[in-house]
Image 1 (tube, rainbow, N blue to C red):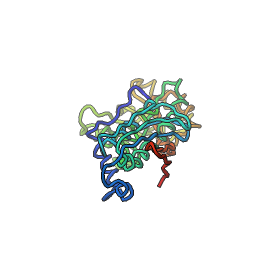
Image 2: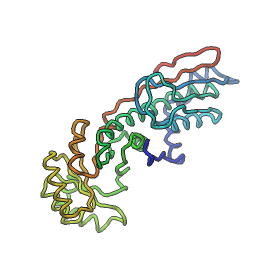
Image 3: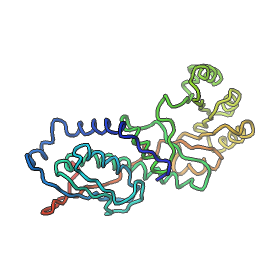
Image 4: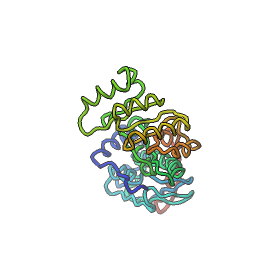
Length: 298
């Protein structure tokens, strides 16, 4: 896990988790609450990885159970962001059985989703680990899950791009079309935004790169450019204003990533680790001391 990874604070996490628990539990867990009407027994459980990947979301899973009952103890056996192998136990749980059963699905769903993102992100990061370019994510996220999905890309070794529209200025093709030109867009926006927001401009041609340079953009994005054209753009920017940061974006895959990084850009943004990742399969095995059962996925 990157040393710069920051877990969202409880003030932000708890309302999200509360909503997701309410979605699943509704007016009550008919199964669990019918089994335990009084004197709920204590139980133990294990979380087991079923395929290789980067485990992510353990602190969030712990909070899910804690919100249901503060007597639950969720004890990870691996570090957040650690690569794990099939059949590896990643956490031990103990506490009231009703809380373990009611929190199971929400906690597992979140951890599986986030672990899948971190696992794919780590593969992208490894491809360019020996080069200066840094991988960054995008705003192509699942509504309601952006904060946690972007947390997962951090765990996988990427950097976060802006979290939302209020984080920074990014002048894209439709903004340019609406304003009439890159120069007009930069001029109007820079006069109205608060200090110290930076201005990033999306460019697709060398002419647009030159216009962005002439109007002193802080960051220039090279969008969907062939590698050869991207190399020319990087050389143009470095020769003119070497302090400007350069970002590459558009249809970045594991196959094209390294060639893009070798052009000399500072950042490579891609939605793929979030939009193309699959869930990492995890399960919870419950053992009450007298019996054990493998929970299914329903």
